[in-house]
Amino acid sequence: MTTEITEKDIFLLKERIKPWLSDKRYAHVLSVEEEAAYYADIYLCDRTLKVRAAALLHDIAKEISSEKQLKYIKKFDIIKCAPENLPKAVLHAAAAPGVIVSEFPEFADDEILSAVAWHTTGRPAMTVFDALIFLADVTEATRKHEGCKKLREFFRNNIDACKTDAERAALLEKTVAKSLEDTIKHVKGKGNELFPITAEAEKYFLDGGHLSE
Image (cartoon, rainbow, N blue to C red; front, side):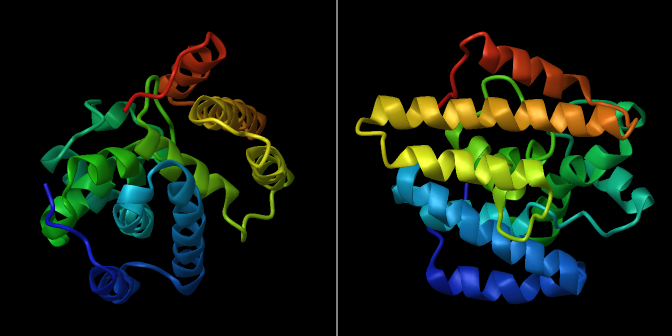
C-alpha cells in the first residue's frame, strides 16, 4: 500500500511520466486525470488524489515496445492470463502494473494496480475505483469518437437528477454497461480480437450485477 498521496506527489508524477509518453499521449493522460477527478469528487471524494494518480499512470506502458510490455506482464501479471492469449490492444494495460511496481513503487497500491490493469477491458464485479478509471479513459474531453461524446453526455445529463447514493451508484453502473457495449461494438466493427472478459463484464452488468467496493 502507498503512503498518503499529496498534491505535491501528483505534481511530481506529472513530470516523471513525461519521458514515457508522446506529447499526444501525455495530453490524453492529463485529460483522463481531469475526468477521473470529476468522477472521484462524486463517488470517492476521500480518495480523489489516489484516483488522479491512477489516471496519470493508466497508459504508462502504452508506448514501450511489445517486448518490454511482455517482460513487465511476466514480472507482475495481475490479469492472470498467458501473454500469448492477450490481444495486442490489451498488452499495455496488462503491463502497466509491472511498470508501476518497478519504476513508480510508491504508487504500487492495490487499487491503483487493479484500475490500470483493467482500464481497457473492464471486468465483472469491478470496483468503483476501477470503474472511474475505466470510464474516465473513454469519456475524457479530447476523445472525438461520437460514442465517447455520447457516453460523456449521458452521464452528465443524468447525474444532477440523482438525489441518493443508490441512484448515483445505479447511474455509474448503467454508464459502465453502456461503455462496455460500445467497446465491444467498436472492437468487433474494426475486425479486431475481443478479450473475452469484456463480454463477460457486459453480461454481468446487463444482468443486474453491481460494482464492488
